[in-house]
Length: 302
Image (tube, rainbow, N blue to C red; front, side):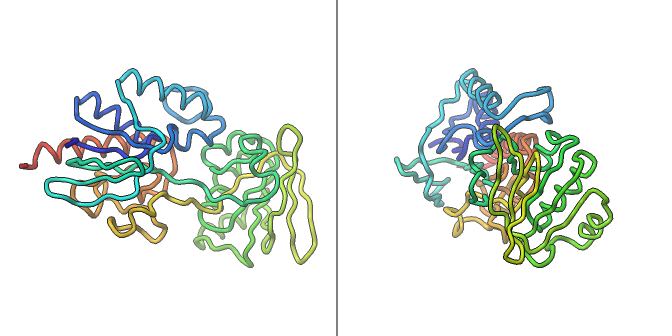
């Protein structure tokens, strides 16, 4: 039986695995792919200790750090079920089943996509999915933020002093964010809200040069240098729906120590209920989850 099984090898899961290795725990790291959100990231400028990097470089460095710490993940393996057994848990995947005293879920989340022409083509070339992460890349530029909820308006608030002009394109009749956010946005001189507008196309050459949207049956064009899509994220927690308590957005409910509704199961990173999708938060959550799992094992009589 393992001391812990870590599910997911983004920054939260990888951090937990590094800590597990250094504590000489018997552990297993299971993941569909290495890197998690890193694989979708452009430039990264806000991770302490690293002045400038990008998702590919960061992921490569993380791979080397896993190897340095003798972490050997089970790659291309997808966990399908977790169930309670005597003295621990059984984790079943598409390749087998394993037993463990504790489990750390770090399956992450993915941004919802628009699914329109040009979106995939210009990903990391002017199309981004995190205003806080990538907003500074558009200093002095005209940009569009797509969405009408809290995350979109928080993105506008964050980038208002960075971008030159911000078009907030919302497919609904009105904004769905908190009133205080809506009121703040209305006071910004460089922000234009376009409601009942469906984004239909992202244009560019090597990088984004504009987008098209449909309003009242008419196609409209905007010239832009960036498009930030903020229409929500989807946590990878479907396989846990009957096992753990989830919030209304399907994130795993955790306390400040990463503990879930099932004793002995911990969660960290974008799949957990913090709703702040930042690498540094995921790393801290992964470390916390592993340390608390180790403490749980030490205090439990088997």
